[in-house]
Length: 179
Image (cartoon, rainbow, N blue to C red):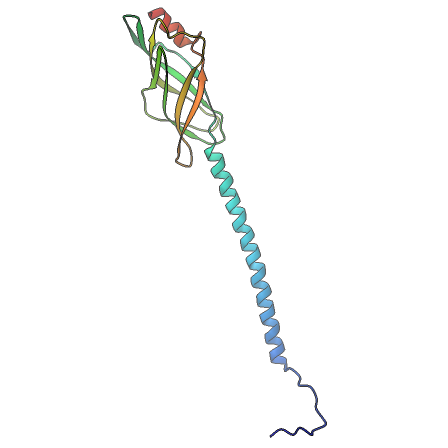
């Protein structure tokens, strides 16, 4: 029974256990929040680093230069077929694998004849190519547009074009002596 006429009404005081329990809950919530912020920051940083690495791996920058064209060849009725070397320099930030090289224009056909070649960042390699020249039309001053099939670090194959000047190159000199 509750006596409503009681004049000595004091407000109920919280006991010490409930105050301590409330502080522990608040402290736990603050700790969980701080841990979430820290873990979220670390996760975002790792995500950003992974994205930057993928972007670096996707960059392909190559330079190609005709080298020796006198690795063997033949001449038949106004056309020359010879094997040569194409020097390829990887100027990009990540290693790439050159899977194949092709080029074609009136009077000239070029294709790689060996397996793929891994080029580290800043590295140089040589690709063996087979060249076919029509002696009447092959030697124009316009550059030959090479198409290089390249696999990047993200396991994707990309096609890269690079212009190579044949006129005056070792390939040109070797083919002209056979024409």
